[in-house]
Image (cartoon, rainbow, N blue to C red):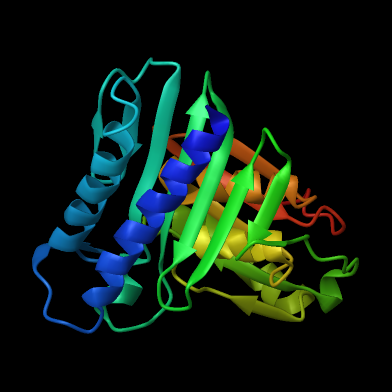
Amino acid sequence: MDELILTTARDAALAAGGMIRGHFEQELNVDAAEAHDIKLELDRRSQALIESVILGIFRDHAIYGEEGIRGDQSAADQWIIDPIDGTVNFFYGIPHFAVSIAHRRNGVITTGVIYQPMTDELWIASRSTGRVTLNDRPIRVSSRKKLADAIVSVGVSKTEASIEKGLPVLGAMMKSARKTRMMGSAALDIAFVASGRLDAYIESQISLWDIAAGMLLVELAGGTVDLRPHETVPDKYSCVACSGTIAFDHL
């Protein structure tokens, strides 16, 4: 069963990624242009494609995605989907975005897949095998031990409260780390932590579909993820994903 779930997640991510790549820098239909975000018709179409692959095999599984939910959300098996993480990057022609798909059973993430269509990079994590790979090669978190040597990505949501909370963190990292980044795709940020490209990803307000797959990547790559429900916003979380060799306890 776990092998079929992994294969299904991989196939769905590759299929959606191929479709998204084909529309890069093409004319796009915008569903909603918000003050700090953009919703594309392609987001919905990507999730629909992912759902068709998954539910074509697992008809009784639930879908929890950025573009909507399907099925019984209390079901033992649930898929957590972000069909395009980094939609604003995609819309502006910045080739830094990803498809993120995770499966969890009874609340425990079993499988995580993240696919970057423009670089053709595929991250896969399987709890049953304990393997985490990038394009079939095993990966490991960074071994750097000093914040002064580290590169850290900080995400800041655009609500007033998250800005007030996030800016001091951003300032602290800019002063203490070697480099600080704001890259526009939480899924890729956390995959980069698992790969050792980043030493940490810090976000004070994020949705589960942005990071569910990446959390398993980081865990199996030897890192740590501190995920906590947001104090005031339902279905949002604060997240610190890191190598575990540098302390971020004060955040």
